[in-house]
Each structure stands twice: as structure tokens, then as C-alpha cells.
Length: 414
Image: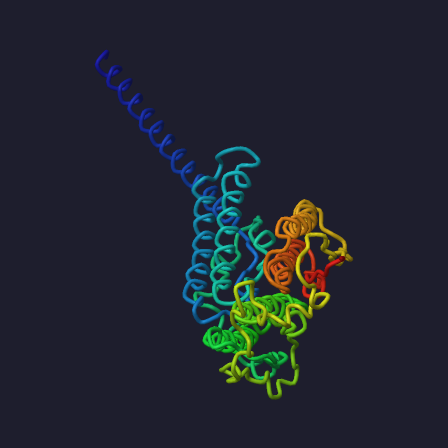
């Protein structure tokens, strides 16, 4: 009787255990199913990065820069994909600002650097564009996912390049005034004059080439600021070098660098600029361009004498230099004020030094001693100083014309 009861008791316990195991297993399966469902739902709700496109802002891209631009466009896509991957892998981590601080913020810095590199790549060949790196670097989130993880094309957009090329035929041409050497060129200066005449033509050719390669870039003043302005500075320097080259062996001429340096744009693109001559005039140097005796160059630099008060005679040490005032007739940027002050003081120092030399060299040299040894060098110093003032202002505002050529020469008060 007892065995029977014991058997019945054990059998009942076994059944109860089987039901418990089955119940636990059922609950586990249910929980796994719920977990999978939750995970699937959570995956569908993972946000994705949404960034502004860059390729469509590029404009015409020079051939030399296309490979680098393509690499950087692909890098922008890679950065977006990496950001999306990190968002998925870090679900539930951090606080409310985790994505902004750990993902979107670093992504913005990376994009800013890449877009800047693209500007630099283009700028090595043509005018450096402003692709608005600050505005295009920031990205937002698509809260419900989706979006384009690779918004940039794998290559430089063909439309951007062809659009610029299609307009090349209508860009016009640079037109510059002819630089005429209206004085006899000394034999010693002829080679340098020839080189600079050829350089003037090269500068025009380069400006026209840049005009074509930069179609569609910049704003309304792009051609003036990026092409015509720099061309004017180059021509001014070249014409000045020609004056100086001649002036080493004859009277320094005035080739009107200020008037001949400015070029314009012929919108119709007609004949373009007239080609500069490639050789200096073949005339001989002026007669008397030599040493006329032991007391100075009596036959030298007669033109230099005429730029002052004529033949000033023997230096008796009593004359005083009389120079025109240099008036700054434009607003001086604050950044240039100190340099302008220094150069204005230097102009007075140059006059004082010239007056001191007149006194210390009394009765030295011949009739042209003051013109050749004092007034001539003083004119060159003043010209350089006034030019530096124009340049100082031009670094932060429109470069003014202070009339360096007209204000450089000084006379004598006897």
C-alpha cells in the first residue's frame, strides 16, 4: 500500500515538472519573439544623415583639378556612410545630444576640410572659388531613416564642365593700349626692352586664357577683380622696368606706365589686343651720352635737366629742393595708416637729405651735377615711395593713383 502511494506521488511530481519546463520554454520563445519584433521596429526607426550636395555647386572645373575633385566628392560620400554606420552601432548610447556631439559635429569638421581642399584644388589653375564650405558642411538627421547615403556623383559632373566650355566662344577678349617706346633705346638696354615687350604680350595671352577657363565663376566683378586688376599691376611693373632699363644709360623716359597699364574687356571678342612689338626701336642712343670731361657728364641727361628748372648752373650750396606735395585724396584703411605715415615722413627725410647734400657738395661737379647727382636720384626715391603708398592702400581698398610720375620730380629754389 505504501509503495503504491509512493509511486503515485512520484508520478504526479514528474508531470508537474514537465509542465513547468514547458511553460518556461513557452515564455522564453515568446520573449525572443517579442525581442526580435522590437529590434526590427527599432532598426526601422534608426535616423540617417542628411547633408547638402556639393557637386552641383562646383561650376566649371579645370581639367587639371578633376581627378582631385572626384576623389573628394567620393570622400564626402564615404563620410556620410561612416556616420550612418556609427548611428546604427551606437543606438541607445549617450544622452539626448549624443548624435549631435559624437557624430554630426565631427562630420561637419571633416566636410569643411574636404570642401576647402576642393576650393584649393580648383584655385591652383583658375581663380579660387567660394564653395560655401561653412554653409555646406553642416548636416542634419532624417529622423525616420531613409535618405541618400551617397548624394555626390562618383565623378566630376559632366554638365558642370561642359557648361563652362560651351560658353567659351562668347567670353570676349582683353584689350590693352599699345606700349610705344618713343625714345631712342641705348644698345645696353635693347635686350631687356625686347624681353619686357614680349612679356607684355604674354601677360595679355595669359589673361585671355584665364578669361576662358573661368567662365561661370565669381560674381559681377570677377573679371575686374581677378583678371583685369592683376593684369594692370603686372603691366605697370613691366613698363616701369623698361623705363628703368633705358634710364641706366640715358635719361629715364616717362612711358606713361599709369596710363598704359589699364586694360579693358571687349565683350564682343573682336580682334582682341593688338600684339606688342617684339623688339625695341633700332635707333641709336642719343648723341653725347658719355663722359664730357672730368667735372661730370656735361653731355649726359639733358632731358633730366629739362624736367627740373633747366640748367641750374654750378652748385654754390645755397639752393633748396622744392618738391610738390603728395596729397592722399582717398580714404586710408586703418590697416595701412601706419605704413602711409612712415612713407610720408620718408618723403620729408629725402628732401632734407637732398638739401644737406647740396650744401656739402658746393662747387663740386659741373653744371648738371645737381640734376644728375641729387635731383635725379631724389626723383627715383620719391617715385618708389609714392608707389609703396599706393600699394599699401591697395591691400585693403581699391589701389589709388597718387600720380607718382607727376609728383616724383622736384625743382630748385635758388
